[in-house]
Length: 373
Image 1 (spheres, rainbow, N blue to C red):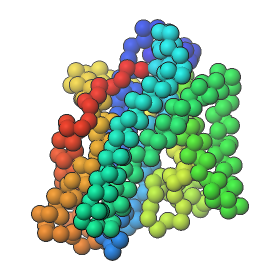
Image 2 (cartoon, one colour; image 1 turned 60 degrees about the vertical axis):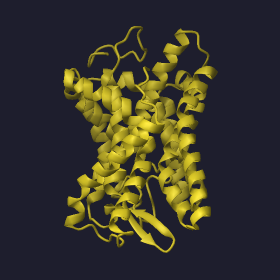
Image 3 (tube, rainbow, N blue to C red; image 1 turned 135 degrees about the vertical axis):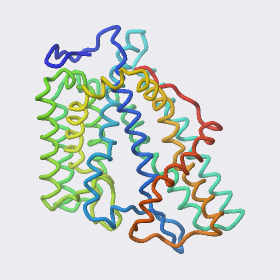
């Protein structure tokens, strides 16, 4: 790894040691998503079945936590770096770009598709056998977190184009993608072309992924530049949110007219900049921790289970909800505004689904070691 203020070359050197901090960021970004779904999902029951909401719609000011806990920009950023590093090592072994892309797509698409198909078939069987009309809503809730894997697969498929743009235009492509995301927002929010906004599913997440190609250069920057990146993103977030155009939450909030995530807005670009700066500011402290034997074991364990846990966490949550309702003799009354007892139950809301998810991983998931980039 380059020393701060030292060589700023973006090239990856042969024999470079594995970056434990990259492994940590990639795994933690998935685990934060899992914990958010478990701890902060409120299921409300209606005639058409369950519908999810969150405490963000009831608790004033809680949305500020999403600036730290909405970590998908960071996941795509780290993913871009890992793909570039993996491709350069594969190329040294004589692997072609087509083969490399196909192997990456296959390794991620097969388990995701298997999970989706299993739940769709199971939902159809339950609907047919028991006449439960709302089972399709349950299936949709369980497989809906897979949307970001679908986007990730598209970005992998576009990797040859992304690599060419990186070599040809370097940092300029980041400026163009950020500008394109802003233009999409103008067309959508100023002129009412709502469908155009979905282009940002590729533009914004593609920008985060492309930014990962510059990971080594960011790491090599002097400390004051890390702080500058953090404050640039933070000021951007404050300016955009308090302009009155964009909501403050980085996740969708039921009842809000606009979401920064579905589809992503230019605010996510500012969030990406803020999070890149934040992880670089924290880097020295975290790298020292990750060198300790106990932290190394934690890092290895988290990386081994992060992806299987993400894939099956909503399945475990569904099992936990079903068990809870069975023990209670039926669905509980719909939760309104979270009260003190609801907040005190949050540890159980994590422990219960966790205990129900691990058997599913053992039965159907593969215990995957973190793939070496």
